[in-house]
Image 1 (cartoon, rainbow, N blue to C red):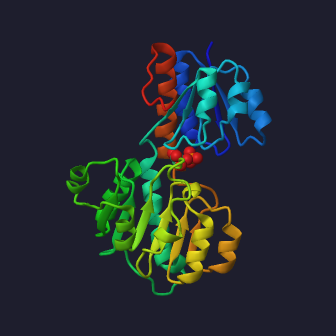
Image 2: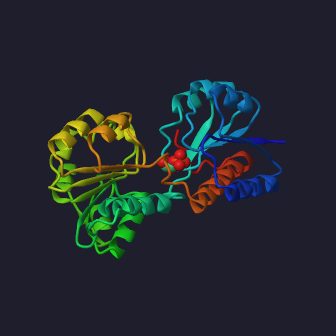
Length: 306
Ligand code: 3PG
């Protein structure tokens, strides 16, 4: 009997685990559940004899991949796969996949939750400001960026997007203004919503120079990855520009410094929770289980990333 391990430090909603189990039951597979584990050793032990794994932001490094001697496929139930050591997967002959688009709406909704919370001063009763008529810059027009645009239209925002991988016409036909450079996007927009992945090209790319382009009262919303921010540059910029605010679902490494220095100018969630809804968990979890079955039974490699 094939074994599939769900290794999630941040657990899926129970309804998603039930959905995954149903898919695996139907295929005649055994599901092993490892939630809220405390150490990599715990994960390594659970992974020792499994054929497949489903993970979230869990760090599947070389040690984990090597410990999973029987592993054939690992699926990141979500979009970003920067937490999987792809080289280690290649070495071990393991296929790595993601489930693009499945949790995107949840992340997009959180963008607006954070913006409104900030604009209304944390709901403290003082007069705040509104989203209507403000310029929103979508930095990367992928699955999340598209949902952000759709919701922003309902709020009456003026939309701009920068994405060198998407045709200008495809952005334009959605009533969004495409811009040619990232600098242009940051110069024009009151709000920037980040949706770039973390990779060698993007890490620390949101730096002092780029942020300096933002107009007065600028707000940067990060539901992507903390690694794309140059944190030193961010602090320098926040020191010079008391009008600027930073809202992030992925607290920076220098969270304590920002909290101490910039009262009222940041929002950080307790734990990355953009994709933490029952709906997103069900969508991504069931997609991951289905992809595993399709791969192991039919060799279907859709959404392979290595
Ligand atoms: C993703 O890349 O899909 C999101 O960042 C969600 O991450 P999570 O599964 O850890 O919530």
